[in-house]
Length: 163
Image (cartoon, rainbow, N blue to C red; front, side, top):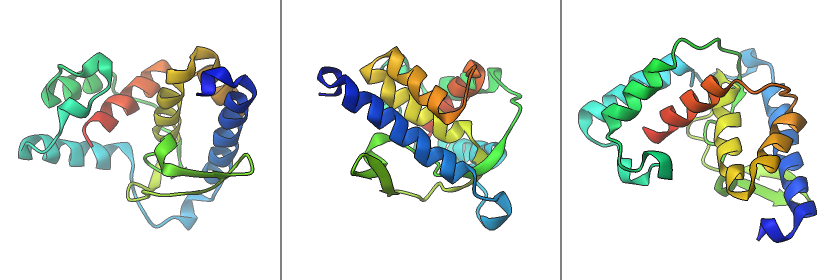
């Protein structure tokens, strides 16, 4: 659908980036919730140990992977330099409300809290990939990311697979 409407695609990428810029600009001290990398890694480990990670919901690239393979691949990308901001935590297209070309709200905020900004960027960037690399690039550019940290993008995507 978006492939047939390039102006709509660009407007979507711009709206997502604009919303995240505003969200990420909130003073971290104003947010009482922690959702940082260490916290989420610990939760992910508990989920793996409890056998509740649904690996069949993984991205196509990792569909045949076990939860332990995902964890090992993610750990190979550590350590990361972190840039803590207020994040949504699961900023995917299904969790946003758009009206009049702007993101006016979001749902599914159970993972909201202080975390690295790439937590949100990686998920939105990944979902926009279904519509092409140029839309992914536009999204990051509009957010203010001139040179995306591929390790951080991949690390946050791997971590997301465990939830």
